[in-house]
Every structure is written in C-alpha cells, then in structure tokens.
Amino acid sequence: MDKKLKQYFVKSFVVLLFIHLAYFLYGYFTFEGIGNINTTTEFYRFKFFDDVSISHFFVSGLFLLFFLIFLLKNHSKQNYSFANLLKIGGLLLLISFFTFSFFVSYSFGMNAKLKSELSEKELNNDKTVLNVLRPFLYNYTSYSSEKLFNPTNVLYPKPYPVIEVVDSTLLYDQYYSREYKYYSIDTLKMLTADLNKVSAATSTILDSIGFGKKELLERIIKKNTLKDSTEIIYKGQQINPDYDSNICIFIKNKAIYKPVNGIPIEKQQYTAAVNRYNLLYKFKQDSLLHNFQKLDTVLRKYKIETGIVPKDLTKDVLFYKDHHDEPLNAIRNTFDRPALTEKLTTLERLFYEPNYLHSSIVSIFLGVIATVWLILFLIYILFNYRKKAL
Image (tube, rainbow, N blue to C red; front, top):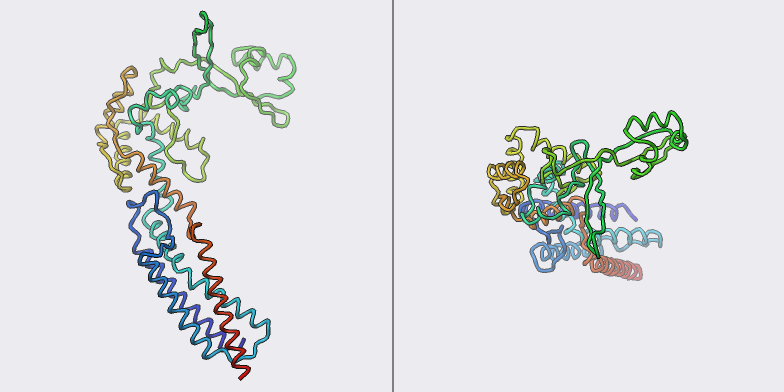
C-alpha cells in the first residue's frame, strides 16, 4: 500500500471514532435512570424502528457512500500485489465492522451512565441493607412457613446454629408421636491416632466435653481428616429454642435478599444474622429505626411503590419480638416485593452479565458486515483492475 492510501484509512478510522463517540454520548445522556429499569431493560438491541436504529442506518449508509467514492476516485490506480490486496481487504473488513457497530457504543454510553448513577459499591451497600432486614420484609402469611422460619435457620448467637433430631414413636396403626430435639453443632479437633484407639489421652479429651467415645461416635455429624488430625463435627448440648428469650421469629430465618458478588453466601448469611441480632437485642431501638429509614431510602431510590413507615415498622417488629405467641398478621411492611426483586435481578445482569450484542441480532449483524465487506472489496478490485486495463 502506498502512503496516501494508508493516510486515507487512518482518516476514515478517525471519522468513525468521532461517530462512535457521538453515539456513546447519545447513550449516556438518554439513559432514563436506575429508577426506570425493569426486567426488559437491556443494553441497546438494534430495533429497526427507533431513533437510534434509523439514525444508525442513515449515518452508516452515508459514511460508506462517501468512503467508497473517495476510495475509488483517489486510491484505485495502483498495481497492488496479492498480499497488499489482502491487507486492504482486512482494513475494509474493519471499516465495515466499525461502521455498523455504532449501537454498541450507544450501549457503552448507557452502561457508563448507569454506573455513574449507581456504583457497584453502592449497589452492594443496598443489598447489604436488604440482606440484614430480609426477615422483617416478608408478607405476613409467610411467617407461618416452617420452611422459612424454624430453629435450624438460627445462625447466631451461640450455641446456635443447631441440628434438628426427630424421634418418632408408633402409637397405633399409622399414627406416630413425634418429638423434636435440637442440639448445638460443635467441633472437636484431635489426633487421628487418639481417635482410633482407646487410651487415657482419648478418655481425658472426651471426658472434657461431657461424654465418652461411644456416645461421641453416635453424635458425629461429619468427620474431616487432614494429615494426622481429625476434625469432628458433632451434636453437642441440647437446646430449647422455643423457650429461649433471645430467639424470636425474626431470628429464625437465614435467607438473604440478594448476595453481594464475590463473597461466600454462607459468610453473608452469618454476618447478616449477627447484625440483625444486634439490632434486636443489643443496640438501642434507634438503630433499628435508622436501618428501616435506610430501607425506605433504598426503595424510593429504585422507585419501588412502598407503604412502609419506618417508625411504625420499628414498633411492630419490637412488639412481635417480645410476643412470641401472637400471630404475626399485622406487621406494617407493605411494598411492591416483585418490583424490587425484578429491579435487583436486572441490575445484577447489567453489572455482571452485560450483553452489548444481543443474541437475537448476532447473525444479522455478522451477515451485514460480511455482505458489505464483500461488496466493498469486490468493487475496489474491479475498479482497480479496470483502471489498470485502461
């Protein structure tokens, strides 16, 4: 390739760069905000009928028209070798790609605006608020669910968490009497050799936790062996959660609203449980109120319809904390739960699985690029050959 043709391609790419920048800014300034995000929100998919698609069609067409005219007029008289023609073909392929990908830059602009309004740190902070307060936010009918609210979901304080053991006794025919017992989940580390033999050392270790080797073996939940040591997870002391004054229904739930990306879920569940326990049993009532105020701010930021009044919800939570036998059917925690779930799910997709080229248009996009490239390349070769023949 001669120097002038190289300069022409450089100038063409510079022009394309400015057009891409214009579409980036267009996407940035037309983003409707995090409050208007819903489950159908995605980075721009070429839609063929809106202003982005229509302008894209005309801008791309005009650029290619003028590009081809000046290319044929000023740069089609050279006797290029096959290798040089391949290089020119490669550059024309890049021209075709960048000419038909303005909408991708538009998507990048939307993404940039999204993250200027809501950083990943802010999103994680909002998730943390929701994770801590999750047990206070169920519909009142959910509080009767033994799956959601039960003693095995208590993660804090010690001696929780616990394991449930059900003893069934046949009364008559097919009728059974069931007794539920709960044991703390404890851990013992000892030398594997000591565990496998009956010795004074072993007896001393086992006596220190209150029972002998046979009873320990019956209580073992899980054993993990590492080198010369064995970690035994076993059923420890018996617990009565229903008679524990520090355990209320809000503590009997370990679910989180949305996990923070990059942190083990089990760790998040435990941390949320500790914070929730502190709000209910250790900190002053103002701390719980302050957290419900943060919840109200989160809901309004995402434009979630809500009837929550932080002071009223605080009173309700404290009432049901101290009245275990009251049916929990008047807690004032009404808000649009499906909308919040939808909003957070969409935001996670936009943050962690951004799809700048929608799968529904990939084949069309690649087909258009290949077709335009082939036409440009063939026209250039034919004009070049024709001028050489003349």
